[in-house]
Image (cartoon, rainbow, N blue to C red; front, side, top):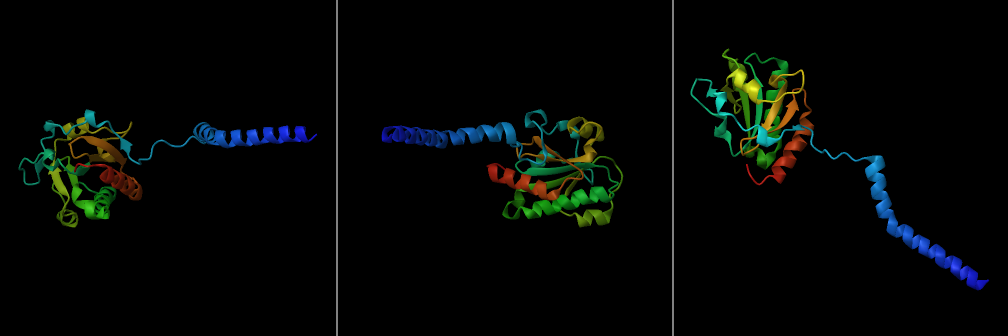
Amino acid sequence: MEEVQRKTFGKWKLLVVFAICASPLIASYFTYFVVKPQSRTNYGTLIDPRGYPIPSSLGSASLDGKPEPLDTYKGKWIMLFPHDAECGEPCRKILHDMRQLRLAQGKDMDRLERVWLVTDKSPLDTTLMREYDGTHMLRADPSAVNAWLPADNGTIPADHWYLIDPLGNLMMRFPKDADPNKIKRDLAKLLKASRIG
């Protein structure tokens, strides 16, 4: 009788050891196939940077008409907003968010530039220019801008704003009504991970 109890106890002990050893494997399968974790941790839409380098055809110029290529800001991360000179409330919100997002990066804020690509020849509101001093305001050929910047189906580039990496490649897109707190996390991760810019 004692021999049978010892064998039964030994079997239970073996089963417990097996369960302990197998539990991480079972948990990983459960997590992967049942819980299905999100592999995407970024908020913005990633764009393959190899497909969208800054084109020379933009013909960008400063507001006084002097040629100023977007390449001038290579070496830094560029927050880019394409929009015409008629800047209503949604446009002003993006300019404001870009300014605040840059400031929110603290010691890394000098690694970011803000560029408003003005896509028409209309004059800009001088109070707007003063309010967003520090944002580079460049005029660019609208057809070249639309050909370069990818947009979601049924939208145009002015419905988004973009992030260009320090090598001069477009790499991320945000909707115009984007949550600045989520963009802040994206930027912080990129600046932390990047050794350039």
